Image (cartoon, rainbow, N blue to C red):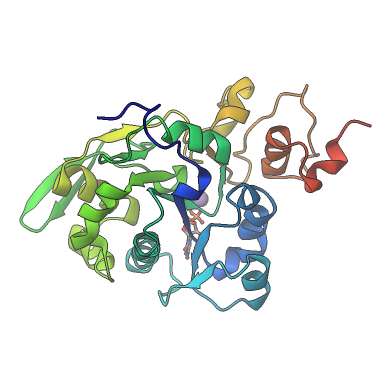
Length: 274
Ligand code: UDP
Ligand code: MN
């Protein structure tokens, strides 16, 4: 096996970023992503959505993919979108990792790249953040107790594992797998990876969803986390010593966090010291 110094260093271009979203979130959540971490991915995020939107199609440089999936928050429609995420990743064989995020995630792209670079991506990896110790689903004739990475905390899968997932995920099969397991998309990814294939889940301390109390995250490590989120009043808490936008200008706190990581970005100019 190769050590990390013998492998080609991972770059952002090796990661296939996909996000499931919905038309109703384009002007808020997708807008915030386009203004922030989309830039560090070199504009490479594929947004799987459910409606026509010429404005955001143009703003994203044609990165909105109309899924053909239904617009509901139901199990099958959401699995349909994640299935499209999977197909989108598989179609671009230049990508070594598939990383799924929700549209209310903020990714520190530099941090994510450095983190993933520790893993040998010639092997099977399923990396995420657990929302609960374990989950139970009945699939085909038996019950499985397994771990899964919560979709809202970011999930990364190495290509060798993604290839093995193809019979359960590829070409429109994923919603059927979800229906058979009677579970949500992120659970079913966990079932497939950990039980149907047999890859242990790796829990990353750098991935965070809004299931956690984000305000409790150690503020001195915030700029090193790979993925955070926001939900109403559950937001990250930047130390008062750091430059930041007001709560009115930046209710999610994501812009302020981003500007403490990438202070030279144009949108961060208002925070620059004069
Ligand atoms: N989502 C979707 N269609 C819907 C509702 C939600 O595609 O009808 C997506 C949404 O864009 C997000 C993810 O599913 O990427 C989780 O949705 P949300 O954050 O609204 O809910 P949560 O499950 O986090 O409470
Ligand atoms: Mn959410």
